[in-house]
Image (cartoon, rainbow, N blue to C red):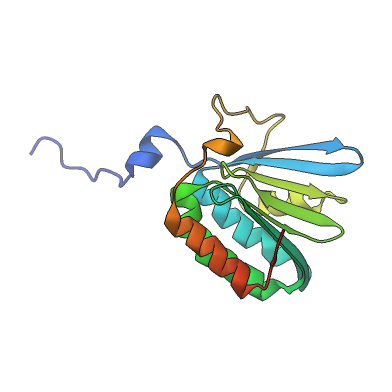
Length: 175
């Protein structure tokens, strides 16, 4: 009865790794390059949320490192692509190993196999959109202290099946 206060609810992940998301912006060969550092789940959620800012017709590429299959589709309906990304959220976060790109002639949003989010654009509009999503801009985002080679992604049959269903649903070509 000595301590009668409410302990704030926290998750284990939040306690040991804060959910702060930051990004850095730079220029490479005339393109604005933004690297977003967020948790795995937040990166996938951000990809889904930010695709809403793209035009109604987009192109999509999926590279599944686990199966070795690459899929590409042009002139796809943005709502269908966004729905497919939403369906892939859980398998992506649980397994990784898939590079997913949604792009137009002006912008490209890429989720790397390690679930890092990158944006390449001809304009700086994404800086303002990321700030609007609650991300802080920093000078540089520290690279990970570890990495996984492309050939080290194995297994994850649920993810491979989900990627194949997505490719079929979006009528992507197998390369």
